Length: 322
Image (tube, rainbow, N blue to C red):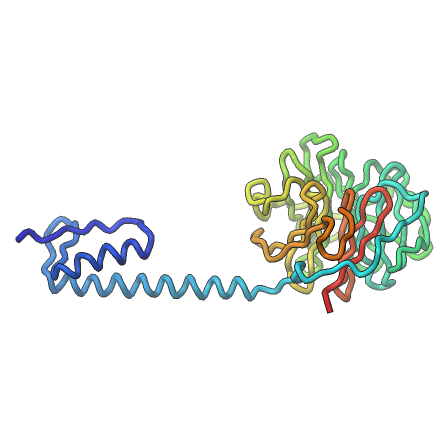
């Protein structure tokens, strides 16, 4: 009787095992090699294949459990803590927000006219800081002490400066300026900015056409150039986001929050862009009675509260459900 021949390919595990089992039931196996394999040797080889496949499945299961155990903020557990805060009729074009740990205050960047507002946690305006010579400011980040950074969308620049408690105006020519992206993007340029203090790196987001994420390592303030890299292809692996309005790096979890205006959500991802959690910014979600009209900026404070600013002048505060 002719010995059956088995060709092992890249079929799914269960298909391969089923195929192997059907031949085992016939009492003999021969692999498609340059020479026939005796039945006893084939059975030993079959056992080895089964052990390898079993180990592979086990390791895959362990990897999945490890992924599930990665630290995360868990945005699905966040809820709106209070009704939206109006920042007043004189506030327009809220574009980005950051938390200043030493003062416990929020710093909000506006464009047209370009300025920064210092807010208390309840949204009260403490002071207004003029940005003289700046253009189309979008994102803002606090680095350390009195050091801040903003980005200019159309110029595609990262700008660093100090804000002391007495600062009322910042002059563009006195700042450290870095060109991030040399390609003209119009009103689809740099939108989001955040600072990773542990790795002394910035994260920047390009809104769309195409969406892009940059990571910029910075050895020392004042260096003539920056090392720009792309941590992953966010145009391909976008978590379903249609655009990028802002982003925030969490020091507590080393995860990244991506804000999308068009998709109306915040997505938490790990360092490789894999989704960890999601917060919808739509009516009926997370205690919202209405959609957030145009979410443009987000940040977190030291206690984990999440702040989202919306054009023209609204501030939303989210916290974990008790």
